[in-house]
Image 1 (spheres, rainbow, N blue to C red):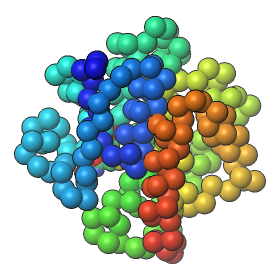
Image 2 (cartoon, rainbow, N blue to C red):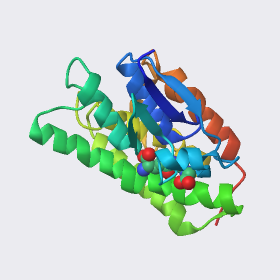
Image 3 (cartoon, rainbow, N blue to C red):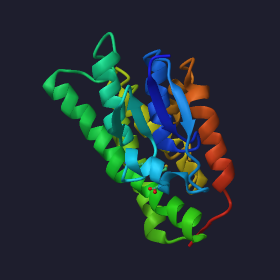
Amino acid sequence: MSGIVLYGLDISPPVRSCQLTLRALELDYEFKEVDLLAGDHKKEEFLEKNPQHTIPLLDDNGTLIWDSHAIVCYLVDKYAKSDELYPKDLVKRAQVNQRLYFDASALFMALRNVCAPYLYDNVTEIPKEKANNIRDGYGHLETFLGENSYVNGEIMTVADFCCAATVSSLPAFVELDGEKYPKITAWLERLQELPYYEEANGAGARKYVELLKDKLTLL
Ligand SMILES: N[C@@H](CCC(=O)N[C@@H](CS)C(=O)NCC(=O)O)C(=O)O
C-alpha cells in the first residue's frame, strides 16, 4: 500500500474526480467510505481531519487535503511522471485552473444547490433559477469545448476529470440533451473509452442519477 487514503462515497462527483486522477496516475490507494446520510462526516473523528466536513478528503501519509480540485492538482504535482495532466507552464496551468474553478464555483455548485436541499431537508422542487444554473453550466462547457477534444484543448487534464464527474451526474436533475449539447456528449464518450473510467466514475455516476432521478420536480 502507498499510504494514500481517499475518504468518500462513490456517488459523490468530486470523490469520483479524485478516483479518476488516482487511476490515471496508477496509484494504489485505500478507499474509506464516509456515509453522508448516516452523518459520518459530522463525527468528531472526521471533523478532526476536515473541519469543513466535506468529501473527498485525501490523507497522503498524514498530509490531509480536501477539496477535490486541490487534491487532483496535488496528486499530479507530487506523483505524475509528466506534467501533462496538470501542466507546469504558467499560461497552460492558468487555463486549466480556470476550468477547475469553473467546476468548483459554477458547475458543481449548480448540482450541490439542488442535491443538498433534497438530501438534507427533503426539498423536492427545483426552482427555475436553479435549473437555469445547470443549463448555463452545460452551455458554458459546450462553448469551452468548441472544436477541441478536451476542455483545455487537445490534451486531457485534471479539469476534464472534475468537469466530467459533475456533468455525468447532472442528468439526475436536468437532462443532457445530445442534440443541444453535441460537444459535451462526444467529449463524455471520449472519456468513457479510458480503461479506468467505468470503475472510477461511470458506475458511481449511474448510481447517483438512479438515486435522484424523478425524485425532484422542475418548476
Ligand atoms: N468543493 C468541494 C465540494 C465537496 C462537497 O460539497 N462534497 C459533498 C458531497 S458531493 C459533501 O461532502 N457534502 C457534505 C457537507 O458539505 O457537509 C470539492 O470539490 O471537494
